[in-house]
Image (cartoon, rainbow, N blue to C red; front, side):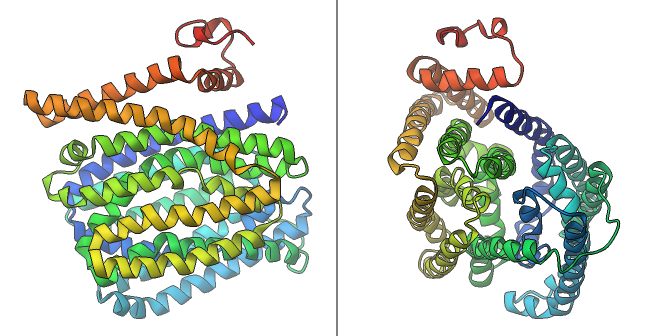
Length: 500
């Protein structure tokens, strides 16, 4: 990757990270407050609804957005045609979900779902309309604009949800907050992209983009099936309360992924598409981005496992302790889930969406079957174990496809991750030892949590500084790409890295 593209990618990820952090922190604060105003059953109902709307939503733009980013040359008629197709599909899907909401409610055995789904169906209209302007923002790497819109949506959703929950609206506080966020984001993408349909609507000319987008959509549908089958199965077999507990565990365990992995994946499609004809450089970038994500997500996930008991008590309260073991297992699964989404982007950006569809189809069969058996045999613990055992095994198939396409070696991929994992495990071991000591000292649970987090941060920083000089050099280079001068990086620990 040339220096200009590297700098653009680093700045884009940084803008997404810093801007998105505001929204994530606000969302987390609001969630902590909401869980004390709402019940696990309320969250379970919303989780059921979002599983359904999320699945139907994949047909909302049939991969058109990713196809626009991947295609290097576009005609105005093609884009207008894509916009028209996306709008027509979103209208059809909204009507379909509204009409079928009763059947979905019967499937879950909960009639409260019907009016919730009927209202959420309207969000498809906004999602389909925003497809093209959002794609152009991504294609131009204007991630600062995307972050601004997304953050505003989170603020509106959080504030409205909190007010409605305080007024006693239960699950509807979550529903109306989501709807408000959809409206804000749709309007924001249009205003900031500067794109609007003008001229002829070349629906026929858009067919090539739609066909490629369908392959992407196919892979996303199967991905969604195996990624969300757990919620359907838990909701159907174990009920809304246990689904609420499981969904909260899953949300917290995947928090590092949603904050870090999503940022890198959003930028990676554009970067990989520009390097699709230079496989050696592409391989180097894949390994570099994977390491970069792991340096953040691995210590976060191991740390969450180590402090899980105190974290649940302090953040959520004693009534959520039932989620402890599923939460710990899902954190372990996150070590794979935090890095393998990047592999999917490689196949899409290099024109191999069919290979991705084949892989996700396999996972879409194996994961749901495994989850059903696990839910019947071991309830929430069994479901979490499927993620820990079956999902990583499937992920090796995806890595194999990427290696065949790019020429990347498996050993290089695993060696890089093992280097990062070693530091995270050392950090986790120190935290667990400290935990035993503070338990003996009888410290309050809040002070225990603070002490454990502080010990983890200090341990990891010292590990990077003294045991992983290559990682320290990469962090230093990233800061330089952001415009930090050599002289400002002369302090410890960067002083341990020679000038380059």
